[in-house]
Image (cartoon, rainbow, N blue to C red; front, side):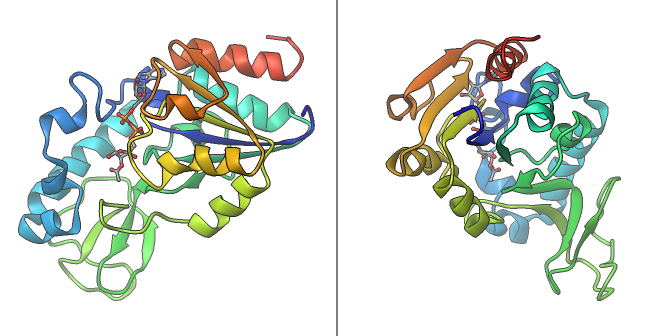
Length: 235
Ligand code: OAD
């Protein structure tokens, strides 16, 4: 196992201690907003200004947040582990990258990028987004949206992710409630293909029964401990 392939899936819980809200916990984003209004193509068609405002606030929060010890520990694992480490995240923030990770697979897109709904061009976007912004490729106006995957849209990089899971020896889900597919189905697939499965979360997730092993507690504590154990005990 020490030189096997570890596939890590992260969710909002890994960024919670950086001050970014989760979705389904008490006070989470989906307790304050109806996801159908702000995270679906239909919601965007109904009221694009509302959707841009929602993501403008999230982009500002993201830019004001700092990576925490869990992000740093995952980056350490990527640097020091002798085997292969794949990092897949459902998070649209850039805290894994700023915490030192590379090759992060953002299956739900990235808040610091824009997507043109007309031509499909994708590019970096750091500030607020407005209804009269134009595409940097086709110059269309009114088609610029955050490059995030909404409910009803196909997550990014799925073929690559399924291939990595098929090749994994250990699948670890960190800070995710296991309630949104296809990510929620990764653990069953990993297990079916013979990988060990580990959940690291504040509390047992909806998928808890499918995991072989569980570490409960705040990610800023559990993830550094787990990584230190994998790397041979040095903190
Ligand atoms: P959720 O909000 O559904 O779940 C967050 C999980 O993190 C919960 O199980 C919490 O118990 C756990 N958690 C909270 N604080 C933690 C901490 N400090 N340490 C460890 N765990 C902690 O968020 P996700 O599972 O990421 O998709 O949600 C998945 C997707 O649903 C998101 O990517 C987003 C959302 O709708 C889209 O918008 C398409």
